[in-house]
Image 1 (cartoon, rainbow, N blue to C red):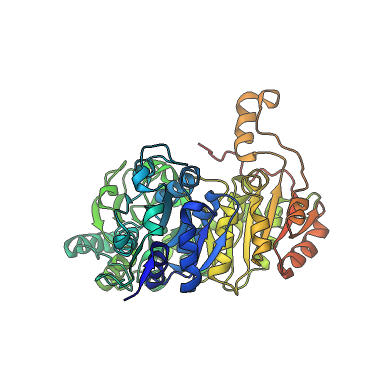
Image 2 (cartoon, rainbow, N blue to C red; image 1 turned 120 degrees about the horizontal axis):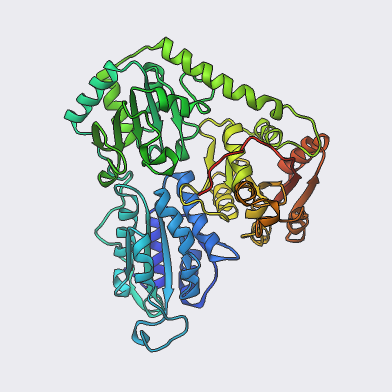
Length: 541
């Protein structure tokens, strides 16, 4: 085999794993990798802040199901990705961060941007390591893909010192072979039998299905299961869209009622964290079945009656084989009444024609324009939470938000990767006016590299998710740091090479959205939105 430099060994190894895009911000420590990518057909996609490169790698995994990869230079290049890596870890997203470093022979001598990257990354990754030699670059990349996807997915950090990337080595592939799909465990048969017995006995079962379903080789079983087993199904995170809104067992606005009345709560691939009040939201007298890829997560914060360490889709398939069918028309009718009552409260705001536009009306108008494969990204607090309650999605449509870490600024990186991974889709980035400011300069990178995405800002001149509670607690005169201005952010997008539209009348909303959706470059519809009580009382801590 041929002798090639270390950067080419890296690109060849990435190509073996099907990598087609590398997200990066340039740096001298990693330029050899770019040189290799040119030879191996990997598109180098550059950004304006390393945080965005990390978020793009995260989003690539969410869309494709395969780890995304970013490469950043040493020192601040690596530290700038910490937020993105932490976000991916908390959300369970497989991604690989390649970090440059000074030459190994100059370690601890004060070379440019020298620091201990490996220890920095260790608490927020599944594996953080420095590659020891040029001839082991491919081996470590193979290991990184295996570890990132195994068990609960998550991020991996590989440090690659400059001399390793500049030195030459044999480009013969290592003995390891990339697997088509990572192994996923089914549930223990005894536990499946116990869970099936509880389900057969239950009169008021409910299912909460979380993001781990996204990584299941049998994620589509959810539809067949819900067809056969009557219960309200509530989907969060990357499970959104797993059931169509028209499905008779799909529910979204009645979860609190169901949690209070259920006699059996089946929780799949989502933790008992703040979203479930640490398990306390579930009726204390209910039985609980918890299924999770992380056996250590099961039973945290809440006693469970059946613990199943396994893959959400595979466990649903096993349960369906045992239960086969269950009909509960009375329970479904009761929950449908609660659902309809909650949705009816939203209708006046969805249908409002007042000026400035009501935020629920804005979100509904966005939903009307979505195609069957389009992707919606939420980057923000209050307005994004409104959108999550209004916009109806069904796979292969996708909803992507940061997840339980609540990271703002994910939007441009998510949108960039989503559009590149699914080029025929419209990628719609829904912003709060606060979150727009985090990584606004990325619109230059989007425009320059021909990546058209649609962004919509719900502009209420505030960090509203925080400000609402702050004003309630302390009064408007004692509410610093949460008020903004009705700034023309669309002009920022125009200056960076995109197109922008300012909207403050409902009559102008539809035409602006239509123009943005039709644009062949990044677009921004900046909507001055009215105040709404829809999110009143929402908890932001």
